[in-house]
Length: 50
Image (tube, rainbow, N blue to C red; front, top):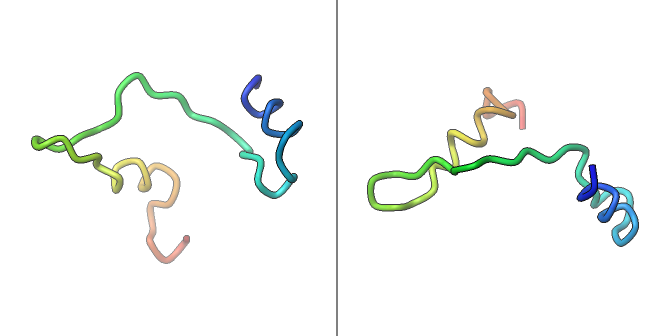
């Protein structure tokens, strides 16, 4: 809530996030690259829905 309030004070309305998720750890592959697809699929399970 504090982060969103901070954004509302400093950014245009269309640039402010509607929600913020905080993760302890981000999913990574064996060689350290971020698994973006796992994060993306939580919000857009169907690629055509983006």
